[in-house]
Length: 435
Image (tube, rainbow, N blue to C red):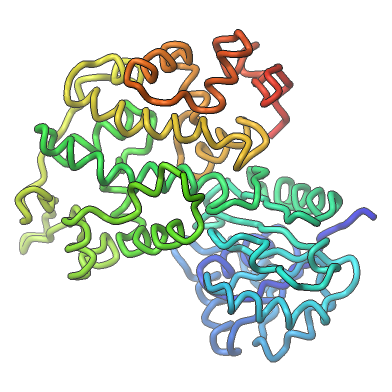
């Protein structure tokens, strides 16, 4: 049967729940927002209306949001989509799912907004009706701003449920829907967190070879086709405590032979920062901090990881303009770029079809979720895949799955015909699906 979403019940009014509720209300939906108490729901609505940025653009949209507590859970029977967005705790999510399942009506669809807990763990032992009707809808924060939404079915989720979510989130909410698999951290965070966690370790070697922290971030900015925050700046934005939490979740759920396991423990200097609460922007400073002077001016300081103390921030201008030049350079910047970006591209190329059935969803996830100028396979095409294979072999490193498939298929690019076709896991080219 065809499913249609016109009304949404959001369970949990935290950052993600309030963002999803606001987006749905702005799209013209009737929304029910429930939290642990009526007061908590009212605070969530205040964030929706008055946040920076607000989750809705006008009072009319805010007026579409009804409030309540989890004591009002029976009200979900009147809603098409029940979206669970409570804390990232398996037991809490399972308890809420057990409560909501008998209350929802036939034909409704259910999702969890988890960013790292496998759907199968949440629904294990739950009624068959729920297992057929449930998915992960992983929005990126802030929901209003970020394009990416990862859609992850369970083993028993029916196609009409996936179609309904793709239609609603893509067309009504204007999101870039990426189809992922029920694997740890899905697509965007699986690759993005590998880049960040391995980056902390590989940047240490770069610092010891003479690169400054500012240069590390400059190299991992525009020349690599990444946002200007670079590595340390991005982790300051996210929070070192969040990265440590992510690493602990990965430790529990990554496959035993996954290369990312080598980087799950923060380096010693970062562990000391975490212990003293030097977490990033939210604590006034992490790797960087802004100093406000008596005359109203501001200056930036850098926490020098080698010296273990604050110093004035330095200007840094990379020598190489783009990733092709970076990878070709036999200097400290080039070696660092190959170690970190080369390692990340190889990691991504080994994850298909584990995390996605095709390379297109991987590339879109990294562009839409992490603001990479190009996705991993688009980047490999710029670098020339056969040349990357040769370099890996010269360094006695294994050739990742998709690069080996490309080589064995006798082709030299992942995309052809101006990006209109992509190389599938069957070794043949297929039309790139519409966004």
